[in-house]
Length: 270
Image (tube, rainbow, N blue to C red):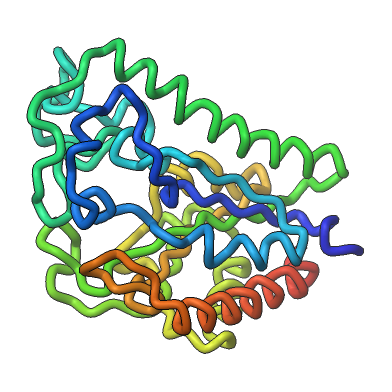
């Protein structure tokens, strides 16, 4: 079986940096605030491996503060969309971000329902249509069982907005919606791959998984999805948000090893 016949796909929902016209307040932010919660460089770290190994993937060009693709459009409240029935503060870091994980204010007033709907059409729908196409392509090739990695990055230390304030984190955190989003053998394989590549790996802490793992990780339908978070301190200056080239090249090499390991050993759990 060739590499492109392996039923493995990758999604990268938070690496985009483009600000849409519907969110002009984002354009005025300093870079360190605008990039505070973006998974900056995750596409740079993963794409060479995915292209070399012929693993299909989808990513977005759009900024997560405008529309977070690991949420659903209903994850909004009165502080993010005018007239929404959910009370202000319920989804401060929801589909539209009102504050950063460091409590920096992003939105000073809620957007109109029209702007919300436009962002759903511009950002959310195309990304998820792309994911569904990847699944459809695998099914067309005769694969009834699919495996999906949702690739993210995380701060090296939890903030007051996280479940683990002040805690120093592992290099990689693998999450499966508390055991609900995939066959445990896939989770074990992915953890082993990253450990063997030289990363320290945590499981389901402080992240359990997001809406992507919830939506696509359905073991009863033989869809197995994992969220994989990478510690930003491994490859970037977390204060300036700038890449550290030598460290980043090392991470790229280890990602290639991990993705190769996963691809080469998937047959054992199919």
